[in-house]
Image (cartoon, rainbow, N blue to C red; front, side):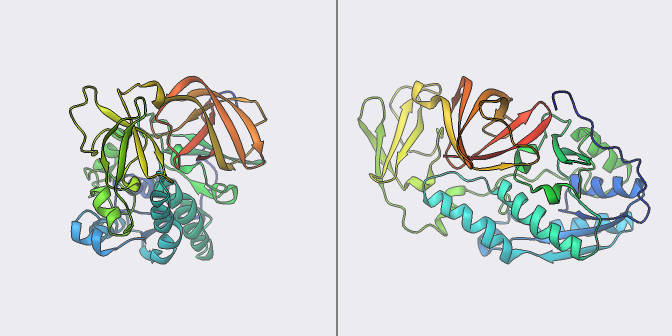
Length: 370
C-alpha cells in the first residue's frame, strides 16, 4: 500500500455483466455510462429522486426535473433504459434529519458524505442488487481496486476533482461491487469525451452548494426548519469583550468570517468557537490567530474501508475537501475513537466535519471530528 496503486483493468470479460449507473443528469455520470457501454457491459441508468422540498422548488436552485430530463436525453442518445427511483423518505430519514440535527447542536455536518454512505452506496446499491445488477457505477472522481482479500478505494487521478474524501464511509460489501469509470480521467477529458459523443450534458455546469438543495442561502434554508435559534453575545476570545450580537449559534461555523454583522474592529473577525450552554459565539481577530490553529483533534464514529491502521501509525489526513494531505499520527482512545496529532498546525478544525485518512493514494477511512 506504499506505492501508487493502479485501478483494476476493465479487460476482464464483461459480456452479460449488468451495471446499473446512477445518472444525475450531469456530465460525469453521463460519460460513466458511455464508457461502460464501450467496455461491453449491459448498462441501465437510474435517476435517484431524493429531494423536492417546497423551499428548493421555490428557490429554483434544486432543478431535479431538469436533471431528470437531461439524464433521459443522454440515456436515449446512448440507447440505454433509464428508470427513476424515489428515495425521498430514505433521504429525509438518513440525510436531511441528520443535517438539521447537527446544525441545531452547533456542529457543521457534511451531508454529501452521508448521502453517499446511506443513499447511493446503501439504499441504491441494495435496490440495484434486487434488480439483478452485477455492479453499480457512479460518476465520482475516485478509483477502486478489487482484490481477493477485499476492495480498496483510491483517489481519483484528477487532484482538483478527487472525491475520495466524500466516499470514505462506504461499506466494503458495496465497494466490492462498485465501478468508477471516470476515476482515471481529468475533468477536461470527461467534457471532451462527452462532446465527442455529442452528449447534451457536455457543457452543463457542475452542481454546487448543499448536495440536496443546491446554491441557496444557507441561513435562509436552515431557518425553515430551525425555529428556536436565540440571539446571544459575540465575544472576542482574546479580550473577553462583547463585540456584537449573534442571531443563533446554528448559523455559524468555525473559521467563518462573513455574516456576523460586526465591523470597526481593525483586523477581520473569524469564528473561533461556540459555547452552547451559555449561548456565546467566540471570535478572534486575524485569519491565522493562534486560537484558530490546533495540532490535535479528537475523532469518533470511525469507519475503515479495508484494513484497520495500527495504533500510533503515521498517516496522511484531510480535515476538509481539497485540502492537501497532512502528516499525522493516530492514537486510539477506544475501538471507535482516537486522537490525531498533526505535524503542523491546522486552521479552523470544525466539529461535525470529517477527517479522512490516506496511505498515499489509498483512502483508508475516516471519522467525525468532535
